[in-house]
Image 1 (cartoon, one colour):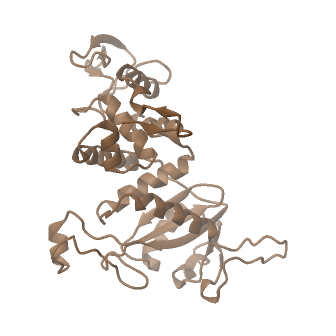
Image 2 (image 1 turned 135 degrees about the vertical axis):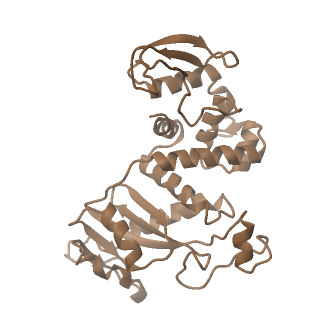
Length: 320
């Protein structure tokens, strides 16, 4: 299947962008950027080439003289031990970076959607498990988002709620939500001009958010929030805290008279718009899977790259 790039007359078959040989070369370049192959078992550089895999001719095999162990390009990586060729995995990751749905990816790669679902789940989990820890300072905004998310695919959890099945669309409770009400809160912290941290929580209470804030935001940071009382302990916790009162129709305030309205949480609000658009394509994400989607989007946003550049960052995280 073809993807449309550029104007409508410029069609490119994405499957021709990379062949299997190039995929394995990309893996080697990212895994061993200095060109020196290291044993994944003992980290030794006393390694010799040992031919190629019988079924995958571009997959190089190696022998470590120190362990001694045998390994190949994919040993101890997320791409090891699967039936789908490496090319399909890399293209799948590329399409995930473009935020295609599982169904769309299946059409592009000519794979059944269940196969694609397993692939995307493994890739998202791999990214989330390996993404670097983020520390925020400077000027940081806090805010909460509430999304409807039930227990799709978890029959026991659905029946426990007293609903006959997942076909009844969840509406969520009015007002601020909780995990129990199937309207889980997502707590967000974003550094102006910098990175973001988002996390699904059971509820939004002081005892829930304060440990997360203290683990993520450097003490002494200037933080901005709305008037929600869960943020009251921030000053006592060592942060400079300013609020904007949304309930009075205030969304930005100029405190120092310089003409710049610095007190606001509009950066976080803008991020929520991006997140909603990202999630909208993946209909019916369950509570169990939502944190993985959030973690993946957090990394994509913080990478500040798109297309092939983003693909390189995703692959590097999975391979190093």
